[in-house]
Length: 236
Ligand code: S3P
Image (cartoon, rainbow, N blue to C red):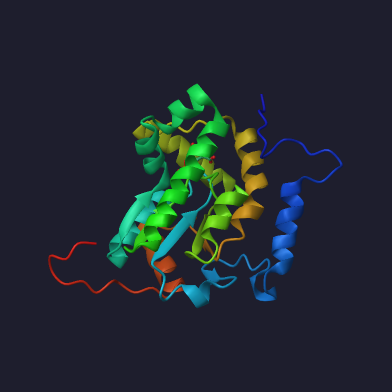
């Protein structure tokens, strides 16, 4: 059975606020940024902010590799790494799937926004970090707004079949529990509803058929980032 959330519910004839807002935002972006969608190429103002960036934010659907690529990228750069879902779990003293199960998705989204707000405040105070967001975070307009001008966003992309395969593999091998991992039909619908949001990222990075290290290196190169020169013994 296909379940609908606010994100993929069938639309009536009246266009949703979200849709018209996203169209307006696209229209306001420079022509070179629109619909670029080219793997490993910059869009929007990423080239202006990236060389001096103090944070990189990885976005994309479940199974995109945000956490594993994020860790590898942080290692290459000599930066810290943070998974927003981990911060949510620490703040809420519950696992993500427990928040969904006991309090529902809207409570999870509230907690997610609060955690991101806190994190962005910390990033302003210093420290360089690669951040992996959960698959639904960037889709929420208020979260995307927190990132504008603060850090380049990177959309890790793959085909829906590949994402589905990776998620099921992680569930089998690592016991990863994803509350929104239902059947393939629902997974595909959610992916299609979210993809236009992900494409607003500064960079789209194709991940299909590539290993984690290669993806991390490609992101680093595309953003023009270099390893942080660090004195021996100095902390991140
Ligand atoms: C979610 C994805 C999850 C987690 C939560 C909601 C989503 O993170 O934040 O279950 O809405 O797609 P991953 O993308 O790391 O699986």
